[in-house]
Amino acid sequence: MKILLTTTSFQDTPGEHHDLLAGTGWEIVRARGPLNEAETLRLVGDVDGYICGDDAITRAVLEKARPKLKVLSKYGIGVDKIDVKSATEFGIPVLFTPGVNHTTVSEHTFLLLLALEKNLLFHTDSTRSGGWKRKTGHELLDKTIGIVGLGRIGKEVAVRARAFGMKIIAFDVYWDEKFAAEHAVRRAASLDEIFKEADYISLHTNLTPQTREMINAAAIGRMKKGVIILNCARGEIVRTADMVEALKSGRVAGYGTDVLDHEPPAADHPLLKLPNVVCTPHVASRTCESVTRQATTAVKNLILAMKGEKPIAQVNPEVDCTKI
Image: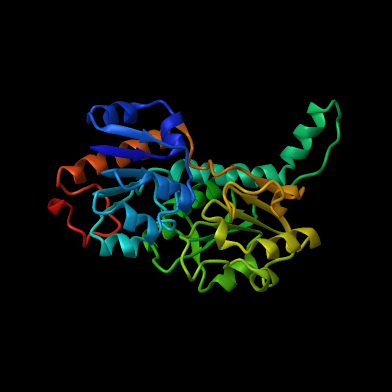
């Protein structure tokens, strides 16, 4: 068996996942993702299994990969870079790892928020350069945070927001009434209610045709002037040009993001040059604890499916792994 492994955090972080994968005796082909379509096309065709991150796995890639490719095991939870419909058509199970990174991503969300509200980068840059310049920041206490997507990560953000003494409003199609009651989360009837009331808006929704560029000029126009927007979901949820304009005008006071519309970005990406943007390189889930959980689950998923057994989690359960 030949397995393609492209996730860099899997490869760079020590942990039991390495021993688990090595113990299979399979040949491991390593590459440094995320890969674009052309790069992915060059590597598939003679691999039996694929542990992927955010590589572009298009229909063309899957057409070349089959019939050799038996299993596609996603390291992580977002499958928007995978053509799941085509994978299902070709009988390739797409596996994923839910419930492994909600703690670390929610912590990272507050890293971004605190960095913006306390002017962290300005102050550290000043002192490192020998200066002592200071700006006045803001408290989080009694501010309203609007959470878009109250899934596992959104819930953990709510728990931490409550600890900071914040008011919490959230929007999600699937509502956990028990959780909301326990953690004083008010349900918004619409996104517009979040936009109208929130001092901070935190995005934790999947990338779908409905959410792509959901945060655009029209949506920003309905938000409070001086809102701070946090994005630890997907860069494409935000229309970059509109966000840049809003940040320059002061309509949006700050943008804290772990994701961009193009990753890695070009050196002249407009969001990277603005002083009111804190951008990290898609590392919100990259902690030793989270990487080990994600990687171990991805390997276990792959092993189970390769053995014709039911995996831990599968995006397209209509593809029967027992018939591989």
